[in-house]
Image (cartoon, rainbow, N blue to C red; front, side, top):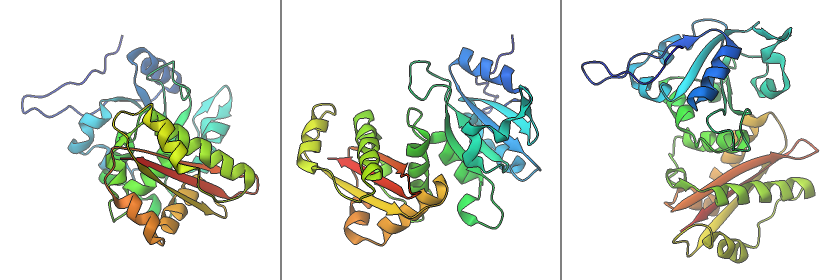
Length: 268
């Protein structure tokens, strides 16, 4: 049996990761080792230098890594064209599947999609961006991780995402985003009631704040970046996002009309 545990060389630096080339075997190994699966849909050598960077080795050791050509198939169908990978837009790039815990609702689901899109700096994937992707909250969903990523790469470096991504706060961000999307109406939750409930699940919470935003359409990462831009243009919202907190939760949901509704919730 192949082993991919972290190996440290004589100088204390992790060895380069081993990239598999067989998707089913890689997925099976990830489940066995209780790791998430990092997929590199490869068209050319664009990401090779970044993925080989020594500073990413320890982070990559937490994943089973698989390198797949764009025409890789499973059961006769191109993998990149299957529904779970739709946000990749049939582009090369990086994708993560949650396989480290079979009890999670995200188990065996895509939790990160980062396509390489020509001439769009928002989708550049260098060492910094890949490191951020690998460090996103492991128990968060695709939409939650995507919005957190859009905030993390923002040049203002919001401090809210340096807090603890608490499950109860992530759940509220999802629930309120769903409510907004269903009503197709941007609005805040009953914050005093929400904070009182969250305080029962997260130790030390005495107060909090909430931010909401919407954008008219686009794919997932488009919606995330646009909502972040909307928050940036609102001083009260951006002040809350930039502040330090104990806990946070972010999520974004697409409405039937194509609009995205986002929520950020913070506990202090």
